Image (tube, rainbow over the protein chains, first blue to last red):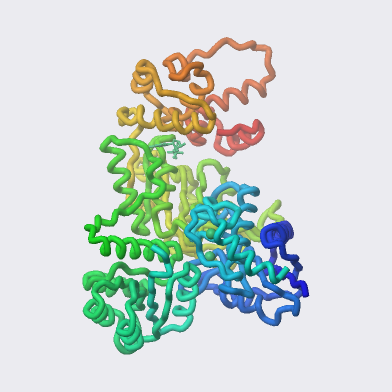
Length: 181
Length: 447
Ligand SMILES: Nc1ncnc2c1ncn2[C@@H]1O[C@H](COP(=O)(O)OP(=O)(O)O)[C@@H](O)[C@H]1O
Ligand SMILES: [Zn+2]
Ligand SMILES: [Zn+2]
């Protein structure tokens, strides 16, 4: 039975971004995608002191009650994410799946006081979709400096990587993907 | 070193902390385990070796300080990293004296943590190879683009490093184009706030009233034309740094409002009544003589003292002429790269000419002169004749031109000569700033 990667809109999300993520998943993972119908309320995960949203709580919402044909669940959001011990997160993923969420908040140039650069922003989003979804297929951080699985804790590091998995990561990924297609 | 071969033990009494740090390190491929208290930790340390132990300083039962001392005894090669709340940094420093590798504050900056662990692993490797550890040097990430080797510039660089470690309010003084914004950026990028925005606002560029809504934001309907609610720059700068350029240009009313915000760290949007809290570091800059302005009661003294906690003075370029060739070379490389052309450098005469010139527009003017020179230069070397400096008498132009044309050109020339210092340009043109601002818009003039 063929399954889908389900995408969740967490809060208001530019439809172009969903589009972008879907295309990226189809290109890079060769898996079909669907937009999830279930609405997720962000309000309970908001922390007014930090002015950020609790990532783990949101991720928990995303993986609750998954559709029967869900292979993976990816939540996309524009809000800033945190977990109590960290100041912020670009995203959070479950190693070996099924769920992951990704915030584009700190991928935007505006966040750093720079003029918008749509192309580079979109590139960052695609790289992070690959990275977080990669984790759900069991990939850990890679030392190849340009591999999408390279760990990045600041945005310039994302820019340094390529939009590709290195040979090693690609091989491990395909092993996991083949039975799913 | 293969992460599989690095073992990290996390000791914290809070489940959520253990859990998040555990998955964080698992994603890196390290061998990870956790312990909920000191007893469990010592137990695990006895059973198998751990390379790095991350431990919370505050735990019920035996606390982190005591645990760290024990670890040093039973496993002296193990690297310990202390996790602490901001409130207990003093205790963390005690732990450093007891031999901890470093400490990290809650909530943890993920980038700091990954750096710290990478450093720890480097150290393991060095210890293994029995190499003497070099003093850890603070890397100055962005400040390397600040060119200059004169004593004045070296001391500026030193001050950036010093002040970036703190949250102190900084005031940067210097003529237009001396690099005030560049310095502000370097401070921000080297501070703990670097993952949050640096928001710049040119106080001299807004007509009265507009600056207010730009800073504080406004609610829908706050004034005609406010069709949407909008966040102000203070709000956007939350957790980051706000840079007030040309702070000497703000109106008395704005001075009062700003003072209130700096004192309370709270403000309200225009047309709103909700108090908004904001956490930002303030850096300001001006080329005006604020002390003189305070004497003349044109600038509030209390605000002056609030802003002027740590002062960095940027000397004009002509007072550090030895830096001119260095900056010129740097800009030459930079522009030739972006123009995809090769240049070997400047001719002797060109360098001499640059060193003799007075640079009223400072580095910005130098930049413009070099940019233009590279466009006209024919050979591999930039010659003196390629450099063009503004001169008093310009070529003769046909006088049968529309008035608008002449006005546009004149305003542009004045702005360029004064490095776009709006206040001074307005003075020279004998119009008020708002009028000048409107003309800039009308003629679509740009820096
Ligand atoms: N020491 C320096 N080394 C390299 N570039 C500099 C230096 N000082 C200034 N610049 C460059 O000169 C220009 C003007 O600097 P800026 O910071 O905008 O000046 P200000 O804010 O004082 O008007 C910028 O392009 C800046 O990068
Ligand atoms: Zn990752
Ligand atoms: Zn890889």
